[in-house]
Length: 310
Ligand code: GRG
Image (cartoon, helix red, strand yellow):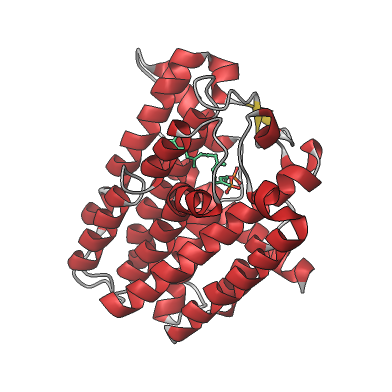
């Protein structure tokens, strides 16, 4: 089972990498070096979880586990690429000396370490803006004969603007930075992670659901599911930072301790933290099932992500 899901995930990662290549900017002009740094940051790899969740949630609601039509992909792909670009920009900026100062990510030099700080700041900014430029292509690609409506695209675009922003991911990072070096309570840590990690999971799954035409009630269930997934994903990240190796993770382990960060492992211990991951994973799956769609892979993916080893 584990081997099969891994193979299924790898197939999807390959497909997503192909889609990313289609949409990455050309490295040309006076700004070539920043374009190169943007593309380097995306191409160094990563699990591509967010675009995968987006597409698989869309499939869940449309109950289509076979090939999606090219009309559907022409609308989904710009959003999938935008999600990965926004996620990548957040990592590029998070690795800067002004934040965590990490030198390795995804097994390669971080963007600032390879290109210098100024270029890395601009590459992050460039990716964020290019994400919206790319997502806007969904409108251009939309056809009246396709299954995805313009109002669904508008809803998806709204989610793409709000969730990564100051009331979402940036908000979480802002509170985290503000409390740097302080001992956090569990409630505070939950709040930070709901925003910092949860917001992009929520955006990914909700955009997939919105494009499939899910109503407000179902969008709310997907919000709850993605929020549990984000939290469980973060707790697992904290556990791996303590229990895994640099080789396996592709980034230095023990970086939370180095940066004096309060983690779930500090507050709960590994056993209790693992219990939380289990509980949240069950909840995430229950909320998805309440939506009564169909896509067994989405459920296996959620379970796999939460119990991942890297
Ligand atoms: C600097 C604007 C700004 C935001 C920073 C997302 C974030 C907020 C910081 C990144 C560091 C971090 C601990 C994020 C929590 C979420 C998380 C575990 C991200 C890593 O995501 P993966 O595992 O990464 O999907 P890959 O490399 O596989 O894409």
